[in-house]
Amino acid sequence: MPTSFLPFSRPSINEDDLQAVRDVLCSGWITTGKVCARLEDEVSSLVAPSQAVALTSATAGMHLALTSLGIGPGDEVITPSMTWVSTVNLITLMGATPVFADIDRDSLMVTADTLAPCITEKTRLIIPVHFAGASADMDPIRSLAADRNITLMEDAAHAIGTRYKKRPIGSEGTAIFSLHPIKNITSGEGGILVSPDTKLTEHIRRLRFHGLGVDAYDRHTQGRSPQAQVLEPGFKYNLPDMCAALGLSQFRRLETLNDLRRQRAEQYLELLQDVDELRPLKTDFDYEQTHAWHLFIVRLGKNRPGLDRDAFMEALKERGIGSGLHFKAVHLHQYYQKTLGLTLGTLPHTEYNSERILSLPLFPDMTEEDVCKVVTTAKEILA
Ligand SMILES: *Cc1c(COP(=O)(O)O)cnc(C)c1O
Image (spheres, rainbow, N blue to C red):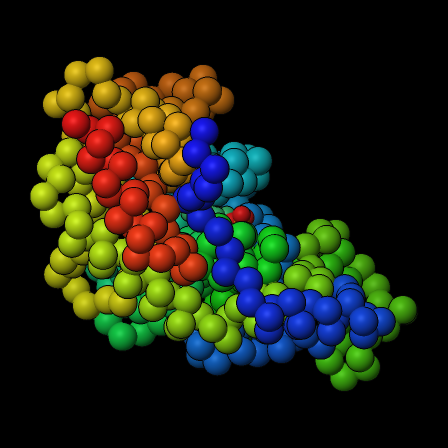
């Protein structure tokens, strides 16, 4: 094993981050409070007119949103199978039926064309995923949903700082960001739901804290009323200040961190031009967008007998380079194979990618030399 292992992702933590967390720890108030409120205010100003609600994870945000929308038995929710399992798990746990739309082969994202055939009388909700930091083509998806009176919720776990036609993701509808440590900015664990629908955000504030008729932290009383009543049974998904402090400090560097990712991604794109076996996702979209470069994904060419994707990842690891798999298609996971029983070939572009993709190292503190090392090593393995 080489001595220095290059992970596929590593959070970028600086002195400001350390000081921000230290300040909270020394303040005497470490759970949800002023700092969380500040994080929500600053994220709200990025995604205005949407309002932000901070939670313990994006998964928690999905749970609360599905709860608030009353998604349950008899309802169908359309989402790609090329996504993280959390969304499909929650749809299933709510008693609803996940319906998978196929994706564009080279962007890994659903389009209005792949979504349309999945719509039935029972469709209540569509959850597109902005993949790897790129934006899905939202205008056609938005009008498709509006025409059929279906709610739309964007999985923006990869897309904090992404813009679609100059508009920040999250500013035009309900969206959920993740602050998990591999995402573009982190609070340790955390998530932020944003929506222009204030009835929804108010409801989610209540649901995130036991369903009490107050927020986890009341900005006016600097705490909360001990006499608060349960208005409906709720959950415990409030983000502590200890985490919010890290999230806020990172959020203030969002542009810088995303720029560093972009530089490394552009370097990869250039160096990989002559490597036919590793094909990146598409970067030339026919709509304007700002890519947040959450992941750098390549597809391994299949015309190489004896070298499959898993073996390639293993070979990288042996040479000191980490890689990720985002994602194995959800319908191919054991539980969903058993319960949904979709036959192979139902989602051709999803399945094509599920067996070929891998994520190369990409994080803000990576150096130019690191990128060169990854590409050189990949070429060695391929040779
Ligand atoms: C990370 C991720 C999530 C879940 O985020 P958590 O904050 O870990 O709950 C959801 N969807 C996608 C596409 C993700 O990558």
